[in-house]
Length: 197
Image (cartoon, rainbow, N blue to C red):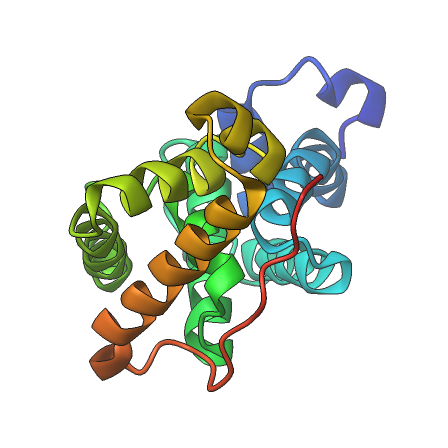
């Protein structure tokens, strides 16, 4: 077993070879190297501390228990694809609330990963729904959800009232929910968006 301090100089591929042979120090080094980044990535999407911690823990448990079975070409890509896939499973199992809609857009699914096809199809459906919104409604919705502008900022930029902004976002969410109704992806209640001042 190699000294843990020396392992910091090892490449990911070198660490993977050691893990394949059962080296726990190499495994711990990979955990130290990537766990926090993975957690931040997951939290930026889910905003749920416990769920994100569970996701990261599950991924590393799987990495260790299947160390002799899994072939990994790029460790970082593998780990972050695993996070994305776990998040997809979370959305699928818990159904998607309105406030989760735009979190999906920051998930970059790997083109070569066939297991993510279902997610890519879902993402396309959502984007198509947004693109089919009335022009003004779509503009306001995109500013709010994709550019993360507050109601106040949107109102000032477009020279309209905050009340109009709020109504247009609510309208957009209702239209999207209706369009996705057949997919049975939403929770039963239409969540009320929390306004960012």
